[in-house]
Image (cartoon, rainbow, N blue to C red):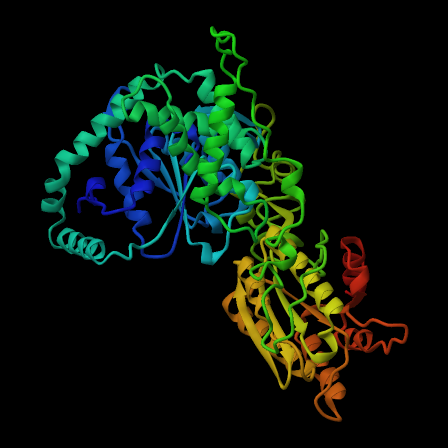
Length: 633
């Protein structure tokens, strides 16, 4: 079946341009495509391959390849590893190339890149930026060229990439389905025509694709001759400084992208229009400092930044000659930015109805803004698991430090143990000198210990006793801090609130933790405190999730003062529910939110029933929490 032509794609102009610029200059570092399902992300990426120049491979000309990297790929499969079969058969070390070598001078496509393990994303982005792969492992030292167009697609609803990884992608594009009826009709019409007769459809758009391919090749040839003047370089630096991006990668990528765009439009030097287009593609994803920051680039902000950059660009040029009429030159106007921008205003975070904890509660109480967020470093599930790769609890893993060997060969080669196992049989095999004689039975695997991501279920007491403004502010700030920590450690999260007579699952288990913060904005408060229902709901959520993902261990975090209400036996029922949760082998910690001089200690009693830890809200810090959880194990 013929592939869908690149020229036949309707809309998605910015995505098409980003892909073309990376084809012109692969050193840009790839494209991250973010968008909802059904927006033709994969279709556009696959169509790009046909536009790339043919490849000279060992004297043979072949078309450029599209190499797809599955989410479950191992590091050996991606970068290559020792050819074990050749070692055992011939006694020679040999390198077996991986997917990066196969993608050389083509396209490497990673669908759902946000679900790929972080260390593999790092490997891909390093190779895309450097154009080479360096392998130092298993006694092998190898390096080979790997120049490819890296494209990753993702649905933000399934979880975000960490800001550190976002920054490693050269360009980022957000795509969405058009709301224009005519455009939607044309999309459906072309897709149906393609499905009816793929070959005829491809022939219809072949001339347009051939023209695009020729333009890309021409732009590649012109690339080295495009001049980047100091004026435009100063404009680039000013833009990056205006948006306060971290590091210098943004400046470099913006310069490469602007140069590629100038070559694409046929220019001999970078102009202001090239810089603006490059900024729209390189800066939006680099503005995200926090998982709860909204992505994107406001056009008004970009206009203002371009105006400031233009002033900076002109300021860097040689000063004009003195006024021939003897008049005084105009002085620079005072900078409107600076200290005045730091003063209080009505749009500050303390009054932002859209910020975490903002808005008006369902009880019409004014919302309490979250208190200052703290850094939660580690909140760990006891024991050693086998869950999804992450950064929280200990687990057996394909990465990490080697802790022991095993006869199971599916864990990667443990070279030392393999040699020792073979050494015991050398006499029986008749070896007196020369190379070691190996047999399949000698192979030993390596058991490695790494880190896993967990399911963190927050049970938030939103009852009347918790609704005091100062306490609610502290609780909201604590939850936001813990959610930020969960984001960084690659966890799934769920949020349950308890008030009145029910426990409400306001957020089912998800990897998109920024949604949890938005749900907290509309959290209702007041009424009774049905903690028993909260614990039972948490148990139900965790047991159901175990069926879907048996290897992912759970941790329940309850934020409450322990004052279960809603009947004479409310506290007793809460204790029974806590006991049931503990019997389900769920690790837990209770954050005691009780305040005042007289403390009832009810939260600590619930922690004992849960067989978990307990820490006061005011003492919630990384070292204390980690110690409490481990001590309770």
